[in-house]
Length: 166
Image (cartoon, rainbow, N blue to C red):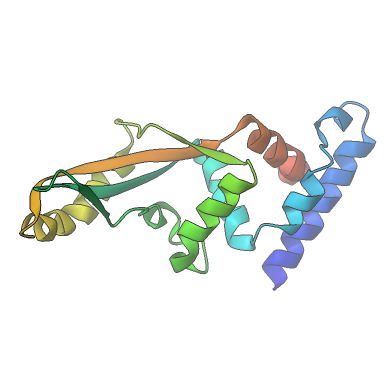
């Protein structure tokens, strides 16, 4: 697609520019070439969102069951924050998994002061009610956290987007 081609072209150009510049050559890690070829345009948008906003929140509903087990429901609702940015919303769990595997993001605590937390809880309110009605459930509670860039992910984003910034 045009988005993918543009992302790859700009990333490679920025990477080459960084590698050629004595002041930024130390930031052009050799593995960045492989990373560029292993992320989709949607994943690039998720990374850019995380870079700009410092995190991407996720939430879910967990039930404590009467048999002392637990179950997770509606896990990975991060699509709420990036839904208008990405093409394939249903692939968010795959995108997150790939970005983890590439070492670009990691999990952090759910920021309590983030307005997205309230939105996620409101979005999941109906799920909480339906889970509470299940015969095996003793109690329910929200789970969650956020995804943020690793130091390696920060370096990758800085290197690949450097010349795009004004």
